[in-house]
Each structure stands twice: as structure tokens, then as C-alpha cells.
Amino acid sequence: MRKILISGASRGIGKAIALKLLKEGHSLSLGVRKKEDLINTALDPKLNNSDTFLVHTYDATDQNSSKEWVEKTVKSFKNIDTIIHCAGIFKRTNLLFNDNEMKDIEDIWKVNVMGPWILTKYSWKYLSLSNSARIIVLVSMSGKRSKGNLASYSMSKFALMSLCQTMRNEGWENGIRVTAICPGWVNTDMAKEINNFPKKDMIQTNDIASICTNLLDLPNSSVPFEITLNCQLETTI
Image (tube, rainbow, N blue to C red; front, side, top):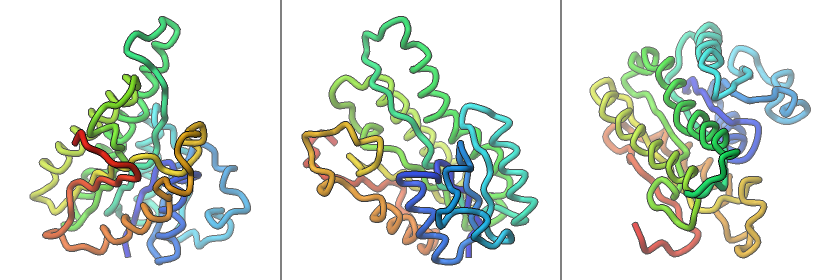
């Protein structure tokens, strides 16, 4: 069984992954912005074994938050061998943005790029000890191609894909395997304003959770670096 950090675990994809891995018996350390979001759910720490289940406040824009979360996890679990990066935000910032949208661009960079980078940085020495560590990153099809006018979001996801490639390069000799999962529309709150595509035809969070569990079972020699998930025909990648 693995000792896993999951960011963004209070809702959407992160929550679905956490629920799936909890049932499988892994030790989970969940990073969430608001612990109260998990009260009276299956991920409520009061309803789980504190030896194998931890919830910590995590703010992707705060470097100390990452450091404290990693330290608390290692103190409880003695090690970390897996990170699943799910925390992210979505902003509709255009190329010709308004002056008052500059903070939106800064926020999306901090959360979508620097958040995973910093959390990985503080976990790296522990991952390197495993010889079979895993880093799974929820990127997006927007990290593969840019559609429409989502300048800031696409920029952050392309940068995140580049970060995944560097993590793979630097961790390879120590057995760290990285997988970038790039889904199209996923049926979560982030897609709630999408009215021209049925929610039932979108990618479902439980299906991504199943992919993650399969990735954790694969040997080092068979872990894919990139998985693209299409609920619509993609012809530009």
C-alpha cells in the first residue's frame, strides 16, 4: 500500500480519487483549502483511522503551506511515495485582458504551476527513497492545445506539462515515474457553465479515479508519461 498526498481532495476529481484509494487501503494525506468541507463525508478524518488518514489545510499559493503539509505527513506516515496533483483553478482571461484582471493571471500561475512545483520540491527527497514513486498530475487538454480565447488557463497548463516533463527527467534514475493526465471536459463544478455539451457525455470523475489506481499498480517499466482523455473529437493534437 502506498503513502499518498492528494491536493484538491475536497471536491471534483481529487475527491473521487481520494474515495477510490481510501477503499483500496492506501494511506492518504489530503490537502484541502477548507477542512470543514469534509465533515460528515466519507473523507471526514473523524470517521477514519488516524494512522493511515490525514487531512491538512493546503493553500497552493502559500509555500509554507506545502512545507508544513509534507512535514506533517512524513511525521505521521514516515514517508511519502506518491503525489497526485489535483488542485487547480479556471479563469476566463483573454489575451487582451483588462487591467483589473492582472491578479487573475497571477493567481492562476501560482495555483496551477507553482503549487505543484513547490509541493513536489518539498516531497522530492522522500519520493527519491522509494525507487517506485509516482507523481500523477491532472493537467488538461488545454496543456496540449489552445482552443478559443482562454489565454491564462492554457498558458498555465502548457507550463504545467513542461514541469511534468522535467520532473520525469530528474526523477527517472531514482525510480520516480510521472504521468500527466490530460482530460477534456470533466463533469465537475468547473464545467457547470458549459451548456452546449451534455454532462453525461463528459468525462466522469470516477473514471479518472480508476485510471489513477491502475497507474499505481503498474511497474516502473510500464508507466505511461501522458494520458489524453477525449469526450469530443480532437483533431489538433
